[in-house]
Each structure stands twice: as structure tokens, then as C-alpha cells.
Amino acid sequence: MLCAVYTHRVMFDRLWKKPAAPKSPSSPNDLGALFEAQTRFFDRNSSLTIVDAGVHLGHSSREYLDAFPHCRVFGFEPEEKNFAAATAMLAPYGSRMALLKNALSEQDATNLLQVNTHDGTHSLLEIGDGRYWEGPAETVHQQQVHTVSLDKFSADRRLETVDILKMDIQGGELQALKGAAGLLGRGGIAVIALEVLFKPLYKAQPLFWDVADHLRSFGYGLHGLYECHYHSRNPNVLSWADAIFTAPQLQALE
Image (cartoon, rainbow, N blue to C red; front, side, top):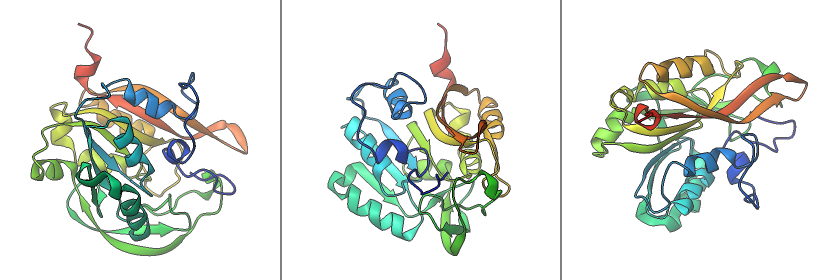
């Protein structure tokens, strides 16, 4: 998820670290297209419940909080330095923002986070095939973290539904979705916006088709792909992209 000099992080930083485009994106690959697509599902004044898994430095959560002034965001960021930076950035939003120092995954447990040379690439998975990275990447150390499932978290917080589930967790998206089987089974997550990988950047990492098949088993459909990243050394190689999946009730034809 890195370019040669790390000018890009991963999907959401390409949106949230740069100034907003002067007009709405006209192409799914335009900067800001992913977020603009999410805003079309909801009225700006809706009281949304948003889960932001992989808060990083806080830009993604801040964008949601600004775009939907009556929403509440529950954010997950397990890495210590990222968590501290996000805490500072999101403090002005008060109780509308709940930031947890946990990783979203399949179950409540203890796991090891691979803390890598770039702060946007930390993962519960080890670094995979280096050919598909756009710059050098290596693990600096491991950090013990607590993982939580979205089903248990939502039950503990008495959240019946989630309007937007955003995930940018470096190959851990499928495991997190498995931990949300209850919500998915009743169509309780309306919109899922996540990074999808087409090449093995991490070891034992599920690819786009694995994620899509899992969501399809619950009746979720692919809404679109956004901000596709093709390898700098071969533009025929699609390495990763962003995707939106929608719940069955949003796909009704009547």
C-alpha cells in the first residue's frame, strides 16, 4: 500500500490527508470518489452509527464526523502511536467519537500486531510478497493487542444496526467480517466500505474474491470499486482498491 516514497498510505489517507476536490468526483478512480459514494446513501442530517476500523491518525473518523454532524463514530486503532495521534485529532468532537485501542477481528482475544516501518501498514498478518509493495517494508517490532468482534461489541453497546462499517485493517477485513456474522445475517450493516487486496501483500491474506464470496453468502452485493491501484512497474497488475458492499435491503427493486 505504499508508493516509492510513501506519499500514499492506503485507501483512506488518499482522501482524508488531501484537500477536498473542488467538485464531486466524476470517476470512481478520482480522489474522494469512495467517500462521495458513501454520502449518497444517507441524508446529511441522519443520526448515523458508524464504525471506523483502522482509524490510523484520525482523518477518516474526522471526515465522517464533519460530513454527518449528527452521527456517532466508534473507532478502532490498536497501535500505540497512531492511537495517541488520533486521540488528539478527534478530541474536539467529544462524545460523538468513541476511540478504542483494540483491533477488530473474528473474536475477543489477544493477538500480536506487526508494527511495520510505515505507520499505515501495521497488521495482524505478517508482510507477504514484497514484489507487490510499492516501497520497502519490514516489521520493526510486535505489539500485543486485544481483538474484539463486532457482534460482541455491538451487543455490549446495544447497537442494533450499523449504518457504515469502514475497514482499512491491512488484510484483516475478512476476519473482522466473520466476527460480524450476527449483524450481517440480519442485514444489520447497511454499507460496508473497505480496502480489498488483489495480490498477497500479507501472508495468508484473503483476497478480494474471498471477501466478496463471504459477503455474498449473506446477500450483500458489490456496489462498486474505487481508487484502484495498479502497480507502478506494470499497469496491468491491479494490486488493491477500495470497495463498497451494500445490504440486501438496499438492493431491492421494488
